Amino acid sequence: MPKTKILATFALAACAALAQDVAAPRLVTLNLTATDSQGHPVTDLTAADIQITDQGKATPFVAFRNDALRAPAAARELSNRPAPAISHVQVILFDLLNLSIAARKPAIDQLVRSLENLEAADAIYLYLINVEGELSPVRALPDAPPNARSATPWTRNIRTMLDQAVGPVAVVRPAVARDVMLRIQRSYAALETLSARLAPLPGRKNILWITFGVPCSVPTTNALPWDCRPILNKLADKLDQATVAVDPIEMQSASADIESNVTLQQLVDFTGGKLYSGGDIERAVPDAIESARSAYRVQYAPAGNNWDGKVHKIRATSSRKGVNLQAKQAYTAEKAPPAVNNTALFQSPFDAADIGLTVTVTPGAQPHTLHLRIGLETQDLLLTPRADRFAGQLASYVVAYLPENRLQEYPVLPINLNLTAEQREKMSRDGIHLGQDVTIAENVHKLRLLMVDHVANTVGSVTIPVE
Image 1 (cartoon, helix red, strand yellow):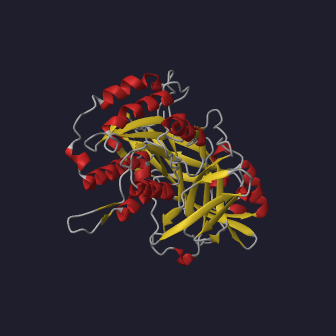
Image 2 (tube, one colour):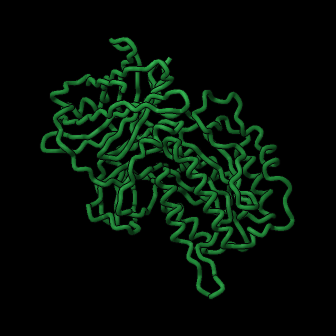
Image 3 (cartoon, helix red, strand yellow):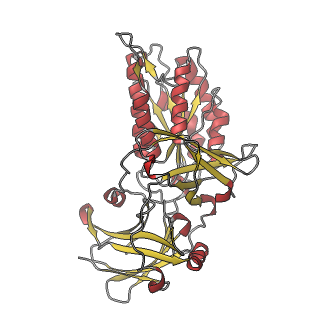
């Protein structure tokens, strides 16, 4: 079994090994974007600028992060701060299934004009829901972090790519497009599949869904309507858990009904997206790209009896004049909390970024060892006040990657924090730094460090090449 040893660069007796078990509250996480009255991103909000109500009751939050303030990694540091191509990902979902034949070409023309002159398009991906209701990539999401930024934006060739992907406009609509119930099911399935593809990518992701929409209920042969909203709620919860916001671009249709708008609005309310009415793709696409520059995360702890399995309403506002916050407005208060799946995090090609981490690697003092100097961003940790101190419960997991996709896990190292107010203030400025020695077998080609905050139920990871 590989061996590890952890050393803290601050005084262990004062800070690390004295904390008792911390009662772990269930948290609600809100991902927000902020814009001013002209629609420009606001990147300098503080915790004091934001107010949250849950079921109409004001609730203080326990953790706040402003992604705009996250400094880039220093030279020779490994970091889980994502590359531009997987940071603030925007997926454009062009919905042939739920657009009329007449609407397709004008929508394509708008989309081309929105994308072809972009200076940077690495974080933009494009999919179709084709006329059979299948998800089809035009520019697919990556299976692993990209190595370098593209010299020329891929969107320069967007007209040709779309023409080839869409093909000739059919005169007759296929059977699936005429079956409303099947059309709804396949639309939801496409969104769920896309959500699963987006889930491993770090940070907040957006789907811009260009569509007429689908109804929220369907008449049946016995005259009783089939209510789609329970299925829609489950889809919206999966999107929210994957940190995916849906921004529908609602195209105008002579046959558009109120129910389709209800469906789109419900996705917006549950995922924190934005509904663009009127079919103005040329306004919606740059607006969504620009708003991604402001990203905040807020966590708060509702009362213990909050978790009743029902839908709860949220409202996020700013006390700063002229600032508009975009966040989810509802969530399902599931009775059981989601578990952190360490195996999936180790197997993912992407690093998790809920906890900001940096790692500097140097040779260890002993043969066949590496010394990891680990930096943690304090703003990403949940430190709970206990009397005159601040307590936290972390754990460090390390896994080695061996040939034939085998994994070798190292012993788990608990890190219990028990900080004075002075220590907490210092670490808020300078971060927390730990040292960890790892013994490396000859056939190891990389490591992954996983840091878990057991109180906040959040994770950060960094992949470490081994030469």
